[in-house]
Image 1: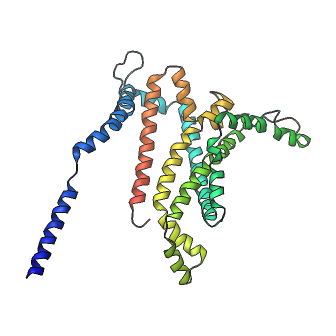
Image 2: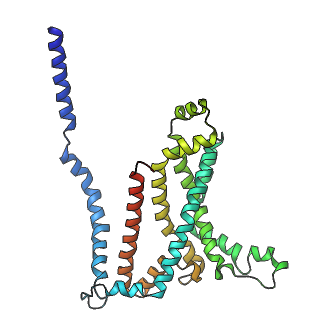
Image 3: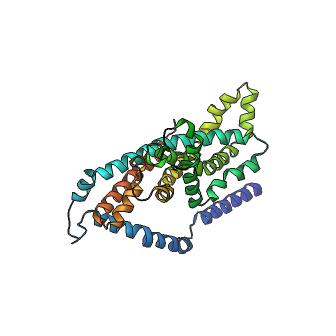
Length: 300
């Protein structure tokens, strides 16, 4: 009887402790979250709300213009060219970066020099954009290294940044700049997988390829989502190198949305820039939501 009373008393104390743990200190939570939330509202949400308002009004008088700004940019050849090049750039760079970085991370996870190589992979992130531009000019200029090497086979020097090759120079630069960081993210995901699962599969006769596709790859789905979103957002940061090496009006193959927004800003075309910014933000949001939906699916 005494034992049952003790157990009942212990059970009540556990319930009371659980109730105490479930109580959320909302005042403390609000105090800690308010500064960050206020900063986001003040410097992100409120300005973006003003951009949305401007996208439906004229730049000079501020009068309501409806969807005229959106119709204007959708019929603008510069916007269509920049959007096409941006989509092409992302469609090539994102799959290539994800595949190459995953392969390198998997091979690196099996190397005994992993710690040293991890540091080396992060070096490109520490190199300033101006230094990258200098390398571009040394290699691809009309009087650059590549033309000097190919001089016996060329009738005249080639200005690579003035041809369609400029787009592929931009692609290589983006992958080189972001490869190390992406490898580290993959490596963190691989290191988080329990070695016991892989060892058990190998004991059951699974080979290295089977372990990769049936165990490692499915467990890297959250990492894949994070890497895809970060790589997608980082693809908008190649403007610095492209602008420094080719100016505001580069070869049309590497004329991206960032160039267009920069030129519209300098010309004070605020109505067109606001509409294009809202449209771009909407496309980015839809892309991220689709990735989130695919990530939440159980059968993927």
